Image (cartoon, rainbow, N blue to C red; front, side, top):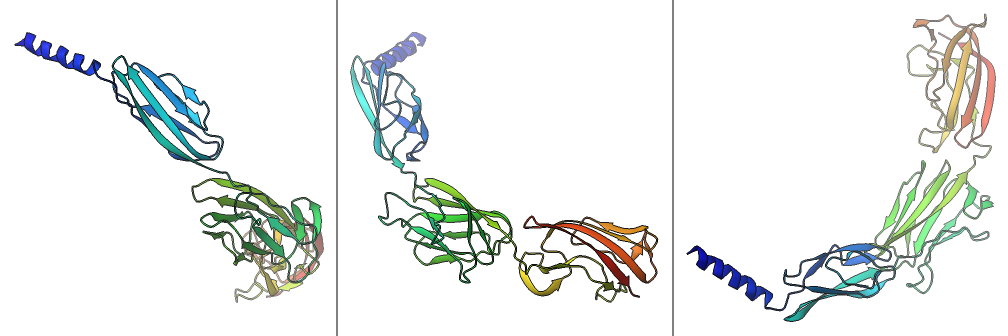
Length: 333
Protein backbone atom coordinates (compact mmCIF):
# COMPACT_ATOMS: atom_id res chain seq x y z
CA UNK A 1 0.00 0.00 0.00
CA UNK A 2 2.83 2.39 0.88
CA UNK A 3 4.46 1.79 -2.47
CA UNK A 4 1.19 2.50 -4.22
CA UNK A 5 0.82 5.87 -2.44
CA UNK A 6 4.40 6.77 -3.32
CA UNK A 7 3.66 5.90 -6.93
CA UNK A 8 0.61 8.20 -6.96
CA UNK A 9 2.64 11.04 -5.44
CA UNK A 10 5.33 10.71 -8.09
CA UNK A 11 2.70 10.52 -10.81
CA UNK A 12 1.05 13.73 -9.51
CA UNK A 13 4.40 15.55 -9.39
CA UNK A 14 5.20 14.46 -12.93
CA UNK A 15 1.78 15.67 -14.11
CA UNK A 16 2.45 19.13 -12.66
CA UNK A 17 5.89 19.49 -14.18
CA UNK A 18 4.65 18.22 -17.52
CA UNK A 19 2.26 21.21 -17.83
CA UNK A 20 2.85 24.87 -18.73
CA UNK A 21 3.23 27.12 -15.66
CA UNK A 22 0.68 29.69 -14.49
CA UNK A 23 1.78 33.33 -14.13
CA UNK A 24 0.46 35.31 -11.17
CA UNK A 25 1.68 38.27 -9.12
CA UNK A 26 0.36 41.00 -6.83
CA UNK A 27 1.41 44.65 -6.45
CA UNK A 28 1.44 46.66 -3.24
CA UNK A 29 -0.53 49.51 -4.88
CA UNK A 30 -1.93 50.23 -8.34
CA UNK A 31 -2.63 53.97 -7.95
CA UNK A 32 0.54 56.01 -7.38
CA UNK A 33 2.00 59.47 -7.58
CA UNK A 34 4.97 60.24 -9.80
CA UNK A 35 8.13 59.27 -7.96
CA UNK A 36 6.49 56.50 -5.93
CA UNK A 37 7.67 52.89 -5.82
CA UNK A 38 5.74 49.65 -5.40
CA UNK A 39 6.62 46.17 -4.23
CA UNK A 40 5.80 43.18 -6.44
CA UNK A 41 5.24 39.67 -5.08
CA UNK A 42 5.49 36.73 -7.48
CA UNK A 43 2.82 34.07 -6.84
CA UNK A 44 3.34 32.05 -10.02
CA UNK A 45 3.06 28.26 -9.98
CA UNK A 46 6.01 26.29 -8.71
CA UNK A 47 6.71 24.63 -12.08
CA UNK A 48 7.91 27.95 -13.53
CA UNK A 49 11.50 27.80 -14.74
CA UNK A 50 12.01 31.20 -16.41
CA UNK A 51 10.64 34.66 -15.63
CA UNK A 52 10.45 37.69 -17.92
CA UNK A 53 9.16 40.94 -16.43
CA UNK A 54 8.41 44.16 -18.33
CA UNK A 55 7.54 47.46 -16.65
CA UNK A 56 6.44 50.23 -19.01
CA UNK A 57 7.30 53.69 -17.73
CA UNK A 58 9.20 52.31 -14.75
CA UNK A 59 12.69 51.85 -13.41
CA UNK A 60 13.86 49.17 -14.08
CA UNK A 61 12.00 48.59 -17.36
CA UNK A 62 12.74 44.84 -17.50
CA UNK A 63 13.81 42.10 -15.12
CA UNK A 64 14.68 38.43 -15.57
CA UNK A 65 14.28 36.77 -12.25
CA UNK A 66 11.69 35.41 -9.88
CA UNK A 67 11.13 38.48 -7.66
CA UNK A 68 11.84 42.01 -8.96
CA UNK A 69 11.26 43.63 -5.57
CA UNK A 70 10.82 47.41 -5.77
CA UNK A 71 9.80 49.13 -9.03
CA UNK A 72 9.58 52.95 -9.30
CA UNK A 73 7.50 55.19 -11.60
CA UNK A 74 8.88 58.69 -12.13
CA UNK A 75 6.39 59.99 -14.70
CA UNK A 76 2.61 60.18 -14.73
CA UNK A 77 0.43 58.03 -16.95
CA UNK A 78 -1.13 54.59 -17.24
CA UNK A 79 1.40 51.77 -17.42
CA UNK A 80 1.43 47.98 -17.61
CA UNK A 81 3.38 45.40 -15.66
CA UNK A 82 3.56 42.00 -17.33
CA UNK A 83 5.11 38.70 -16.29
CA UNK A 84 5.71 35.76 -18.60
CA UNK A 85 6.66 32.46 -16.98
CA UNK A 86 7.76 29.42 -18.94
CA UNK A 87 9.11 25.90 -18.79
CA UNK A 88 9.77 23.17 -21.37
CA UNK A 89 6.04 22.58 -21.80
CA UNK A 90 4.95 26.15 -22.53
CA UNK A 91 4.44 29.62 -21.12
CA UNK A 92 1.82 31.87 -19.55
CA UNK A 93 1.49 35.65 -19.11
CA UNK A 94 -0.17 37.83 -16.44
CA UNK A 95 -0.42 41.61 -16.38
CA UNK A 96 -1.56 44.51 -14.18
CA UNK A 97 -2.34 48.16 -14.90
CA UNK A 98 -0.70 50.90 -12.85
CA UNK A 99 -2.06 54.46 -12.75
CA UNK A 100 0.50 57.13 -11.85
CA UNK A 101 -0.80 60.61 -11.08
CA UNK A 102 1.05 63.83 -11.79
CA UNK A 103 2.45 65.79 -8.88
CA UNK A 104 0.76 69.24 -9.01
CA UNK A 105 2.97 72.30 -9.25
CA UNK A 106 2.42 74.62 -6.30
CA UNK A 107 4.24 77.90 -5.76
CA UNK A 108 3.31 80.94 -3.69
CA UNK A 109 4.60 84.34 -4.73
CA UNK A 110 3.80 87.87 -3.65
CA UNK A 111 3.29 90.40 -6.40
CA UNK A 112 4.82 93.81 -5.72
CA UNK A 113 1.69 95.63 -6.93
CA UNK A 114 -1.26 93.28 -6.62
CA UNK A 115 -0.30 91.28 -3.51
CA UNK A 116 -1.28 87.99 -5.09
CA UNK A 117 -0.44 84.42 -4.16
CA UNK A 118 -0.36 82.19 -7.25
CA UNK A 119 -0.74 78.42 -7.16
CA UNK A 120 -0.49 77.23 -10.79
CA UNK A 121 -1.26 73.77 -12.10
CA UNK A 122 0.34 73.47 -15.55
CA UNK A 123 -2.04 70.74 -16.68
CA UNK A 124 -5.50 71.94 -15.61
CA UNK A 125 -7.04 74.45 -15.61
CA UNK A 126 -5.48 76.51 -18.48
CA UNK A 127 -5.68 79.69 -16.41
CA UNK A 128 -3.56 79.39 -13.25
CA UNK A 129 -5.68 79.41 -10.08
CA UNK A 130 -4.93 82.19 -7.64
CA UNK A 131 -5.05 83.00 -3.97
CA UNK A 132 -5.54 86.75 -3.79
CA UNK A 133 -4.45 88.70 -0.72
CA UNK A 134 -5.73 92.24 -0.41
CA UNK A 135 -6.09 94.83 2.32
CA UNK A 136 -9.44 96.65 2.35
CA UNK A 137 -8.06 99.54 4.38
CA UNK A 138 -5.15 100.18 1.99
CA UNK A 139 -2.65 99.64 4.77
CA UNK A 140 1.00 99.60 3.87
CA UNK A 141 2.78 96.61 2.38
CA UNK A 142 6.57 96.67 2.58
CA UNK A 143 8.44 94.00 0.65
CA UNK A 144 11.27 92.29 2.55
CA UNK A 145 12.02 89.51 0.07
CA UNK A 146 10.18 87.37 -2.44
CA UNK A 147 7.93 85.70 0.11
CA UNK A 148 7.71 88.02 3.11
CA UNK A 149 5.68 91.16 3.77
CA UNK A 150 4.82 93.50 6.59
CA UNK A 151 1.09 93.78 7.04
CA UNK A 152 -1.45 94.58 9.72
CA UNK A 153 -5.02 93.64 10.61
CA UNK A 154 -7.09 91.35 8.40
CA UNK A 155 -5.62 89.41 5.49
CA UNK A 156 -8.13 88.31 2.85
CA UNK A 157 -7.47 84.95 1.17
CA UNK A 158 -9.60 84.17 -1.85
CA UNK A 159 -9.32 81.00 -3.92
CA UNK A 160 -10.65 80.41 -7.43
CA UNK A 161 -10.08 78.24 -10.49
CA UNK A 162 -8.66 75.14 -8.83
CA UNK A 163 -9.00 71.79 -10.64
CA UNK A 164 -12.23 70.03 -9.69
CA UNK A 165 -11.81 66.95 -7.56
CA UNK A 166 -8.75 68.17 -5.67
CA UNK A 167 -8.32 69.71 -2.24
CA UNK A 168 -6.51 72.89 -1.22
CA UNK A 169 -5.63 73.37 2.44
CA UNK A 170 -3.94 76.35 4.06
CA UNK A 171 -2.06 75.51 7.24
CA UNK A 172 -1.01 78.72 9.01
CA UNK A 173 1.42 78.66 11.90
CA UNK A 174 1.19 81.04 14.83
CA UNK A 175 -1.92 82.65 16.31
CA UNK A 176 -4.67 83.64 13.88
CA UNK A 177 -8.41 84.15 14.13
CA UNK A 178 -9.22 81.20 11.82
CA UNK A 179 -6.55 78.53 11.86
CA UNK A 180 -7.25 76.48 8.73
CA UNK A 181 -8.83 77.25 5.36
CA UNK A 182 -9.87 74.23 3.35
CA UNK A 183 -12.22 73.26 0.53
CA UNK A 184 -12.83 70.04 -1.36
CA UNK A 185 -12.92 70.66 -4.26
CA UNK A 186 -11.57 74.20 -4.24
CA UNK A 187 -13.73 76.28 -6.55
CA UNK A 188 -14.26 80.01 -7.00
CA UNK A 189 -15.71 81.88 -4.05
CA UNK A 190 -13.98 80.02 -1.21
CA UNK A 191 -12.46 82.55 1.16
CA UNK A 192 -10.95 83.08 4.59
CA UNK A 193 -10.22 86.17 6.66
CA UNK A 194 -7.37 85.35 9.07
CA UNK A 195 -5.93 88.00 11.37
CA UNK A 196 -2.25 87.25 12.02
CA UNK A 197 -0.88 89.19 14.98
CA UNK A 198 2.41 87.34 15.05
CA UNK A 199 4.79 86.22 12.33
CA UNK A 200 2.83 83.56 10.46
CA UNK A 201 3.83 81.14 7.72
CA UNK A 202 1.06 79.89 5.44
CA UNK A 203 1.63 76.45 3.93
CA UNK A 204 -0.52 75.68 0.89
CA UNK A 205 -1.11 71.97 0.31
CA UNK A 206 -2.88 70.93 -2.89
CA UNK A 207 -3.97 67.29 -3.18
CA UNK A 208 -5.19 65.82 -6.45
CA UNK A 209 -8.12 63.41 -6.67
CA UNK A 210 -5.78 60.40 -6.64
CA UNK A 211 -3.87 61.61 -3.59
CA UNK A 212 -0.81 63.29 -5.12
CA UNK A 213 0.24 66.36 -3.15
CA UNK A 214 2.43 69.42 -3.50
CA UNK A 215 3.19 72.15 -0.98
CA UNK A 216 4.67 75.61 -0.77
CA UNK A 217 5.00 78.15 2.03
CA UNK A 218 4.81 81.93 2.32
CA UNK A 219 5.64 83.76 5.54
CA UNK A 220 4.07 87.03 6.67
CA UNK A 221 5.94 89.21 9.15
CA UNK A 222 3.63 91.30 11.32
CA UNK A 223 4.66 94.65 12.76
CA UNK A 224 2.53 96.50 15.30
CA UNK A 225 1.75 100.15 14.73
CA UNK A 226 1.74 102.95 17.26
CA UNK A 227 -1.82 102.26 18.38
CA UNK A 228 -0.72 99.10 20.17
CA UNK A 229 -0.45 100.51 23.69
CA UNK A 230 1.36 99.19 26.75
CA UNK A 231 0.67 100.89 30.07
CA UNK A 232 0.93 100.39 33.83
CA UNK A 233 -1.66 101.89 36.22
CA UNK A 234 -0.64 104.48 38.81
CA UNK A 235 -2.99 103.11 41.50
CA UNK A 236 -4.54 99.79 42.48
CA UNK A 237 -6.70 98.56 45.36
CA UNK A 238 -6.18 94.90 46.29
CA UNK A 239 -9.33 94.56 48.42
CA UNK A 240 -10.84 91.53 46.71
CA UNK A 241 -13.77 93.29 45.04
CA UNK A 242 -12.68 92.17 41.57
CA UNK A 243 -11.87 95.69 40.44
CA UNK A 244 -8.25 96.76 40.04
CA UNK A 245 -7.06 94.14 42.53
CA UNK A 246 -3.70 93.59 40.82
CA UNK A 247 -0.87 95.78 39.63
CA UNK A 248 0.25 94.45 36.27
CA UNK A 249 1.03 95.48 32.73
CA UNK A 250 -1.97 96.37 30.55
CA UNK A 251 -2.35 96.40 26.76
CA UNK A 252 -5.16 97.06 24.30
CA UNK A 253 -4.61 93.62 22.77
CA UNK A 254 -6.47 90.74 24.37
CA UNK A 255 -4.88 87.40 25.26
CA UNK A 256 -6.08 85.92 21.95
CA UNK A 257 -4.30 88.71 20.05
CA UNK A 258 -7.46 90.63 19.07
CA UNK A 259 -7.92 94.35 19.62
CA UNK A 260 -10.37 95.49 22.29
CA UNK A 261 -11.77 98.76 23.49
CA UNK A 262 -9.80 100.02 26.47
CA UNK A 263 -7.10 97.97 28.16
CA UNK A 264 -7.13 94.35 29.21
CA UNK A 265 -5.92 93.08 32.57
CA UNK A 266 -3.56 90.62 30.92
CA UNK A 267 -0.77 91.62 28.57
CA UNK A 268 -1.95 90.11 25.31
CA UNK A 269 0.73 91.88 23.27
CA UNK A 270 3.56 90.94 25.65
CA UNK A 271 5.81 87.95 24.98
CA UNK A 272 8.36 88.49 27.79
CA UNK A 273 8.40 90.66 30.89
CA UNK A 274 10.43 91.38 34.01
CA UNK A 275 8.37 93.47 36.44
CA UNK A 276 9.84 94.51 39.81
CA UNK A 277 8.26 96.55 42.61
CA UNK A 278 10.20 98.25 45.46
CA UNK A 279 9.12 99.97 48.66
CA UNK A 280 10.39 103.40 49.63
CA UNK A 281 13.44 101.85 51.32
CA UNK A 282 14.51 100.10 48.10
CA UNK A 283 13.47 96.60 49.18
CA UNK A 284 12.04 94.46 46.40
CA UNK A 285 8.53 93.41 47.43
CA UNK A 286 7.42 91.80 44.17
CA UNK A 287 8.79 90.36 40.94
CA UNK A 288 7.25 88.43 38.04
CA UNK A 289 8.33 87.27 34.60
CA UNK A 290 4.79 86.24 33.59
CA UNK A 291 2.97 88.95 31.57
CA UNK A 292 -0.39 87.60 32.76
CA UNK A 293 0.39 87.86 36.46
CA UNK A 294 0.40 90.89 38.74
CA UNK A 295 1.12 92.05 42.27
CA UNK A 296 -1.69 91.48 44.76
CA UNK A 297 -0.27 93.83 47.41
CA UNK A 298 1.41 91.17 49.54
CA UNK A 299 4.98 90.41 50.49
CA UNK A 300 5.89 86.88 51.61
CA UNK A 301 2.21 86.12 52.06
CA UNK A 302 1.40 89.16 54.19
CA UNK A 303 -0.39 92.33 53.12
CA UNK A 304 1.71 95.46 52.87
CA UNK A 305 0.70 98.90 54.05
CA UNK A 306 -0.95 101.44 51.75
CA UNK A 307 1.84 103.53 50.31
CA UNK A 308 3.53 104.63 47.12
CA UNK A 309 5.82 102.04 45.56
CA UNK A 310 8.33 102.24 42.72
CA UNK A 311 8.24 99.86 39.78
CA UNK A 312 10.66 99.02 36.98
CA UNK A 313 9.69 96.80 34.04
CA UNK A 314 11.38 95.58 30.89
CA UNK A 315 9.30 93.82 28.23
CA UNK A 316 9.31 92.43 24.72
CA UNK A 317 6.17 92.59 22.62
CA UNK A 318 5.08 89.69 20.43
CA UNK A 319 6.18 91.66 17.36
CA UNK A 320 9.75 91.68 18.70
CA UNK A 321 9.87 95.27 19.91
CA UNK A 322 11.26 95.87 23.41
CA UNK A 323 10.74 98.60 25.95
CA UNK A 324 11.27 99.70 29.54
CA UNK A 325 8.98 101.57 31.92
CA UNK A 326 9.52 102.94 35.40
CA UNK A 327 7.45 105.02 37.75
CA UNK A 328 5.36 105.00 40.91
CA UNK A 329 2.17 103.17 41.84
CA UNK A 330 0.00 103.92 44.86
CA UNK A 331 -1.52 101.02 46.78
CA UNK A 332 -4.93 101.93 48.23
CA UNK A 333 -6.89 99.85 50.73
